Image (cartoon, rainbow, N blue to C red):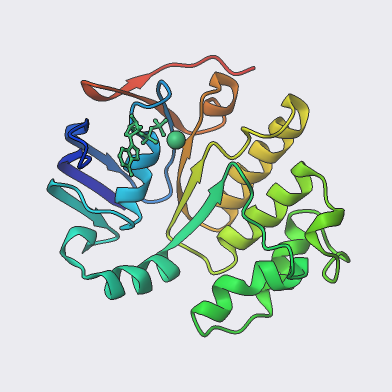
Length: 220
Ligand SMILES: Nc1ncnc2c1ncn2[C@@H]1O[C@H](COP(=O)(O)OP(=O)(O)O)[C@@H](O)[C@H]1O
Ligand SMILES: [Mg+2]
């Protein structure tokens, strides 16, 4: 599903973030990535999504080399193959919940009927016409999960999705996220600081200056 082949990334200010990183994530695998703040977790997700390019190496998603695509081709591929969830929810305030969830389908020119099903799947059936301002953080993240999976992406990228939630709500959201990734047959990458959150994935990797290595975490 995802192959990272000796990728390196520095920023123009001269900071080396990733060097010679290699890894493979299989079809349907859900992997957590942990690591200290500033080690390069968000940078890695941006590279995988084709939002930024590595200085060296190749990234292959579902058989397609992201690193060989121009910006327009990367945007089209991203809309079809990826789903995203962020710490700060990124739910659009002036759209209803249904409109928010339908967005990836609209961008892909697809039928939007599945948006209603996805809202119901995350426990927000009947709330289609509500606006985000009436929702709690946990509910907003449920909307974000529905939106991230509505177009049946091959790979879901979640960057600290429970960073703004209390532990009980985070627990519920993470279990919902896992079950929806599996129900939709997607692969997933969950970036998190929390061992309890990481334990909801199939396996856990630690990102350090030396690269990615497997670690064991104890479920909460
Ligand atoms: N656009 C950028 N320009 C320059 N430096 C950046 C940029 N984005 C991130 N960095 C730096 O790269 C390092 C890794 O950042 P990031 O990937 O956000 O880490 P993490 O998500 O693991 O906390 C940090 O030192 C950060 O300050
Ligand atoms: Mg980050």
